[in-house]
Image 1: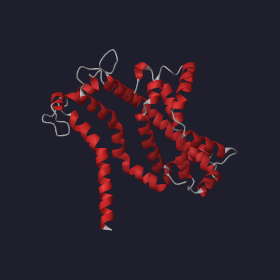
Image 2: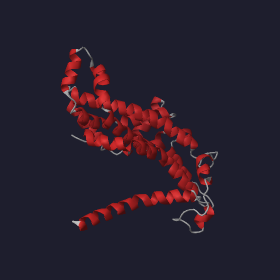
Image 3: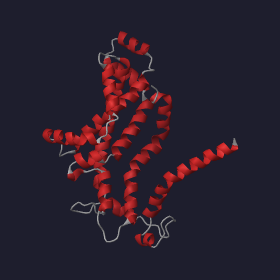
Length: 281
């Protein structure tokens, strides 16, 4: 029994090291002068602590644009895209899940199948058709088109909400209908207030997936309004006489900061939402 525990602990420590080592590598090197990294101090603590790499990654590093302005503009573009896309996509998915769970209609099973099927299709399959459609609709020159794509691509989250709402007492809905409440009123006043756990799960997942997206942002975002993942890729691939690894590490941490903060602040709600029926089918 003790041997099994040791094996479990060893496996957990190995997994922790696998994920923690790259984060530690990026963190400590982002605070080092470049000469110290080239001098061989890669995994150790900085001999001289400095925020110079962070400042340069934020507003001075070159990303292939005409002017070297760092990741600040890309970061803002990501926020302008992610926040509305997450909010709209989550509420839309919640509404669809509520309808599929409690207001069955002819063809509802077919709709559910299409949602499930769509969640397994690689996003690369949509890139060329979306490029043509957006160009004809005039959405290819703004972030609005990218927001529309993220909202549509978040539709499969309705499956999470459906599974969650299946256990919602039907008697409450019937009582609300007797009192004269309509479809939307029941959703807003009766069902939605009970859905906080699953809402937190979907918000965290949607925010993380949209923030970390690269393909849609690369192909569909306008050249002058690209998101932080594209900016990070451009920054790291700029040809330099001497690669500024400390700036690269700082830029990677800046790009990862919002999703890290979201999970740290709402991680317990994420776990609570999963254990309260979010993945129950």
